[in-house]
Image (cartoon, rainbow over all chains, first blue to last red; front, side):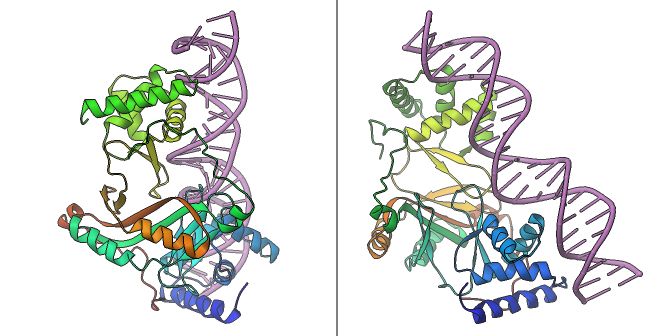
Length: 166
Length: 166
DNA sequence: CTCAGTGCAAACCGTTTGCAGAACG
DNA sequence: CGTTCTGCAAACGGTTTGCACTGAG
């Protein structure tokens, strides 16, 4: 969707990774990788399949999943889970090194934001608990600007319990 | 498992919540609530069922799920998701108001830690993106002290891609 | 006595897997 | 050519749902 150059080089890296691992570089793998690399969104498997279908690429669901595994292992793609019941995938390329996610509970849109204090938090937790961190995830859930403008209200869903436990 | 007093009052609150909503207070609901309130862990549905079985409580899986929904709605229990493919539940009672989670990728143990800088992070992200936050989640994944002592190593899983994208 | 809750089993849904046939190297 | 991949469909596992029956209020 965005620049061709960026996605091209990410694709090249992926192909290089495959060759390095002695794995075949197939048309299907390239097609799936291209979809992910060319998007600046956080795609679900379903969305990836839709794009592939639009492009007249006939690729089985299993192959999409298997290719995504490879993309994640190659570390060119991050796997995300916003508790929607399915996974999302974002290219690590064309993105800020560390970013966290704002997830709208109404429309599901995802915005990225930086949280430079996280390494310090991580280091402190590590020191205090003898924990060796490898990665973190920070998500803030709420209402995006657009949904607020559209007058969406946070539905208290279940009624609030009389006693606020804090 | 821990104090009887704490769990008792949480249970009372839950029963009060049910009555307030005009919902029946049943033995099954009390039994499930007791298991969650009496634990200071982050229980999966499976673990809850195991405890119920030990206590000779014969309660269907569907009822456990339905009661957990009520507990979450009552806001006496938090739903957690560490990307394991299933949910976990923690009582909000007998816990620090705000705590985040250290998740061991080897043994799955979960440790709580405070991150007092999060409200500021949340406020900044909200201000800069017009986002209205309702809740957040921060998890740090890695190796717990015990697993490190046991000599567990982070297996690079897939081989590292030659180019580090940052 | 009535309406909601319960248990069972089937349905669901995202993901994984087994296997025969196709393709990369 | 052998090894790995692909596509299909069936299997999987956590969760949800439909329905007859039980039980709380």
